[in-house]
Length: 239
Image: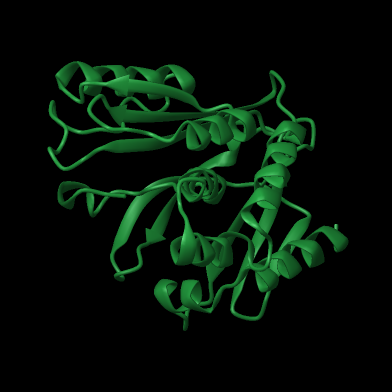
């Protein structure tokens, strides 16, 4: 997800974006590969059922001016490749994925990057670095997801204060911090955090900070879906 030159930069990863891209990919799998992908994506849920669930899930996600969510999918494949019509049709039916047959040349790079930029209102300027596509690349399954929302309770200038941020490797950085009082408090015994809603209360921002004696990597390794959801539910109950 990051190049060597970007290894020290911050990266935001959307689990939903990853899920959708992998689900589209699974529609082209068969046999043992399909079985393994089903186990990873949905446990005991067959891929056909997962397709229907994700279609309904995406359709039900709210989006409005104050909390704008955009999701777009596409399949780009080399013009010399013979692609299954069933594969393309399933991804069109369940994920509204447009399909593009292309030469995979410099123009294709420009076309893909422009598509991503357009579908994310410019928040992601490019997804392919450089001017060329690897000769071994035959297909790109791309999910473009962007979220732009206002806080329910906005930060004022008086809420921004100077402070010291401690990085994972122990270094200190002088930064400006946004300060506020929140009521969705999270404490799972290994980390503390809060939940801050966006305008309309359709979505919220959840932040977690590991305790001082627990490294970031160790905390991430200990996380799982059930424990995270439980922490969120407990925070909401304590509001």
